[in-house]
Length: 214
Image (cartoon, rainbow, N blue to C red):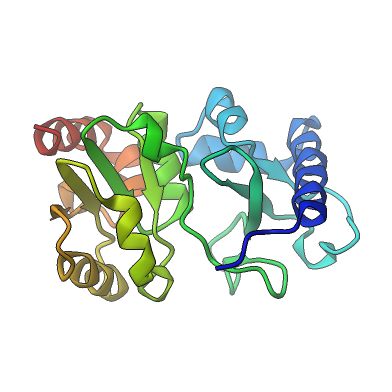
């Protein structure tokens, strides 16, 4: 994967600031969406979440969506994904043409101790991070490349909290096929994913985190 040009990084940073301002504007529907996901204002600020409340050149197709910036380990914005605020929209996630899928929230690599958590999606990783658990998101089995293994080396344990569906099982198989010290766990209480557990079974999620962190 090639590093981004400085001009591209600057453009992404400018767009992120615009979308952050959109989320801060009163009365937008993204704030209510985030509350429903169990995220408070501090979490939104920490992840620099935004809302596309107006047409922005290059992002015309993203109006009305939540903006989720992806930052590299150094803190620079290297991509932005846009999520629909309801689940009946297809596709739920979009990005600009040509943007590559990257591991999400790589700053967690330096924040984690000897246990690193991984999930399948950005919302799930934000969910764990809101509980003080450093986590990165692997955005689907096709996004996990051989060179990503090196980023996960050196931890006593890599805990992958999988989604409760077919793709979630496929990604879990891919991770356990490596030589990494991967432990795969399902979301607690029969929930679909980490965020579902955060909203509907938070005590069970905290208990799971405590147990697998040992």
